[in-house]
Length: 618
Ligand code: ADP
Ligand code: MG
Figure 1: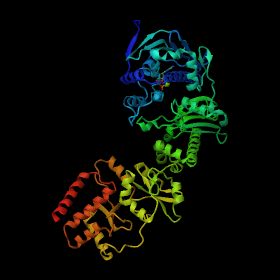
Figure 2: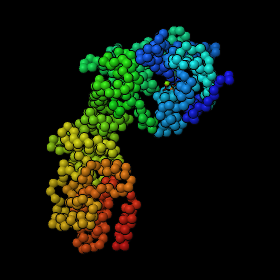
Figure 3: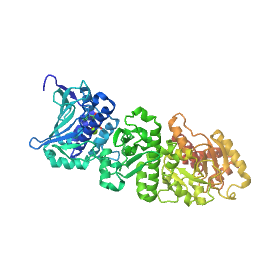
Figure 4: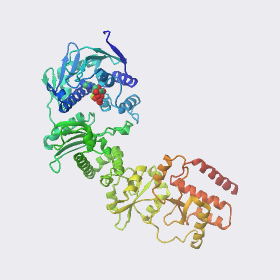
């Protein structure tokens, strides 16, 4: 150490991460090599981009490359690049604190296990923007020598043993770029063997777009796979490319490779990952495809070429029509990019529709993991929502629990004369099937889709129709709902029914907009219907506006054949003062069945009054 040495502590989260990386028994150690090579390639990529846009940076340009040097007797391995390098500030910012929002959740998950308690795979480290620290899987000590491409760049040495702090000292003799020298741990001495390193590179970094040399020997073939013919590419090559481009560890779940010449010259290779990381409580994924023009990378994770809901998709888009030095800003509002976005999105949706048709079982797995994104698109992506609606899946009363139905299948099965597609919302299948809303459908033997989330109702309500049929929620006051034919003569005598409903309305006052005799109930005494929207929407509004404690008044339909309603009618005729209390309770119970009671305490008090009455009458 010299007098110029600056010692700094790692940020707390990084200390925690390092602690995990160093002490984990993770056996797949070559992850570190992939991460360091990927950083070297990123640095080269940034340099290449600068040289396209900045004439000064391009001066005296040597070929960009990555050199790996091994020394078996010294147990060292070095990864050297001639990319952008780092300034002192950049060293502190990039290798001392966490830059990406996703990293903290990764560290949390690493410490506590995933949301479901399962251990999180350390191999995913690179996907969370902390790949550099994987170096400490294999090294006791890391010495990073760097010099920034900037005119004021200094020669600097960064060292750490991963134990909590790092040093920065002036020194080293890099012309430009970064060298990461690892002093290998005892159990990682193998990584000083050129053959081991070469094998790992072929396996995990075969698609790095810059030449990689191991002790002077070139080991990768730099080839943009997406420009090749589909039948010239093996599954393994696709998978390796996916792992490289998505910095992923898993196998891709789906892949889509297509090209076109008109109206746009375009090659696209898309992957759906095996896992939805957002599902494990990680933060939002970063949207974007890597954008190329004739095999030259223009921008990584270009957001403009896919809609937000497609953020789970990884891959590349190469278009000869893109100008080479297009900037991020111009990308956002270029008409060409808007067109590309539409082509890619439409093609991807069509691909999913075909997959769903050809292998429904596999699609069901996809749906289970990724339905969030499809729903987000169906709710927000105005241009594609109709096609996205076809990708939605639901449980239904005509299917066993867990089996799924699409809207198209629903209509194929529905009788010609059926006016609408029906859906009913509830927290789960059991609650829906025990509730009053399913009764008319059961009685009419009509299929009804189950929606378990408010967003489902939001999408269906906004879509209003599908292939010419209305989409109707079971709680809506709609003439399109199945009705029983003819008034049942049982129960409350038909000539007393008008008086009964008028009396109900008077007793309930503003709590119901209307009270009428139900033509749909079979088992329940009453049901409440909405005048507008769906109950899901009302519940959501309720959640947002905490002050609002009661649901907006709806229509109350009473079942004149039900013993409770018959009983209330008798009490009414006797002018028993319990009649009004019972009527109020009928409404409360209907609201409860609708999931619209937000303060159960008020209900308990009323129930106690009713119970007191029942007990005293006994
Ligand atoms: P990520 O690569 O996802 O950003 P890393 O932990 O791998 O996360 O690296 C953190 C940052 O350190 C990089 O974003 C980059 O700015 C910097 N860095 C790492 N390695 C190099 C390198 N070889 N050359 C230049 N900068 C580097
Ligand atoms: Mg990295």
